[in-house]
Image (cartoon, rainbow, N blue to C red):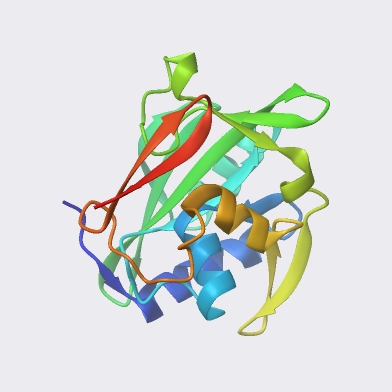
Length: 186
């Protein structure tokens, strides 16, 4: 199991990535989007920072992060990368999920909760309307990129109980059903 990090470590990791990637159309996603919407900050205890970007930006993102002190221990080219960097003596994780166009109204993200990027039934088919146009917000003095409708993203990913601080694998499980997130509460 990955180490749960203090908010300050993930906050600094997110701020650093946002500064480095200011010219890239990334956005917060998964648990990071949930924290930003619900708390105005990364989640209180989380193991990583989650970002989403177009697979066409894959090489640029990789170049920027590697040139600025990040390591890349996990890489599935154009699908998912997990970058690491020491922040205040702790190993901070930056998970990058990459999407591709699916049709005029959706994009596909292949890694998600399942990590089974070779199985099309596990892909997330995400409505463009909740993602685009990407917006920016001030995040502790840094411009942070967020989805067009952050609340809709949180509801789509985490269900109607997204406002409740629940623990993954303890209070709920995630799966992909019909290319959409399904939340099963315990």
